[in-house]
Image (cartoon, rainbow, N blue to C red; front, side, top):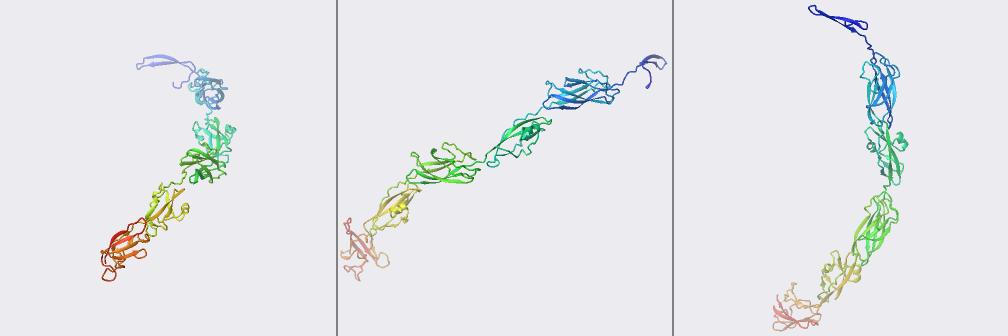
Length: 551
């Protein structure tokens, strides 16, 4: 019964017998049907599309694998975008068992369909989900393929780039725009290239190979950039490379010296304009303005072009206006027309000014030094100490006081008197000239060194033993002072012992008028009395005193 061969619609009878021999009968028919069917399948082999277009061309293959009959020509194929029917087509010929037929169809994707969708091809589908061919398998007629319509990437406009000239007046610069290789991408797989023309950018030709060290062709050059995605879609933009002059001078100024005149408001100022730390010449005619305490005073200009690293020195006479105090700030500003604005582009615009505190100089005021009078030490002369004037005549600690014998020497500061503590006069009175100097100006004055006759000073002991001490009766301030003096010496009984004057030596205890001792002429030990007549106007009364003579 497992391999019975019968004709169509043959009736077969069946008997069912139990163990007791009891049975029943029935029948069934053998019906022969057509089981040899095709099996239609479909597959997309390629999808061709272009950038920014909703038209795609689909290559597909309809197959009849593992079937038992041919797939008839005219079998319908429906094509969907997601659930939207796009088109229908049919096979062109019978497809034999295990055979295939290739087909191509161009589809226009409606605008309502998103850029990303599923493209579905169904064989044996009339567009309503209904087929006309009986197949071995009715569930393998569909093929789905995700599709992304190609849209050109959007290239953000790159910023322009400015760089310094490669060298002074070259007109070209070296630029690094390699960062755009990454920053302009929308996706990591995008490719960014740079070109020197729009045509090259459109075609992707002749891209710049070293964007990290590109030398421009002029002061301003347009660079075209192409952004291309994995599908070959692209967008272009451009940016400008501008080479600017970064090689500038750097003007600075210094005040070198200020020459002043005593009691004058005119200054003779020497200054220097420098161009150090620069990369270009400083042109002739660069303005220089002068200010006093921030007030504009005068204007001048440089004379010649100043080369890199060089300088130009000059001088100017300035008259300080009345109303400006004696102490003030003198400011020179290079590249300043007098209103704080310049005419030169510089590497450093903050170092143009130089300020020096200065002052107008006046002759110092000196108090009239007082004359100095001492007692006559002989012949109208004496030893003077006027060293205290070196400090007491100063107005300020930094002034100097010096002394001279003549006015000419004081004015010229020559032949100073250095011994001011023990100065011995050579005439009476003697004029001394003093000079007070403040570093720039000086003032002179003078004072007198005078002597006067003072009462003599007597000493009361005489020891005539030739030991060199008190061997004679000494009277200080007598000899060479009172030339007409007369001295007489008496013993205690009033006897005249000695008389003397300017022409005789001092008394040595020897009696010249009357012998008073037992031996020789030396007076005995004892007290003696003297009368000193000076015979000088102003000293009418004699000086009377005692002197003691001892061995």
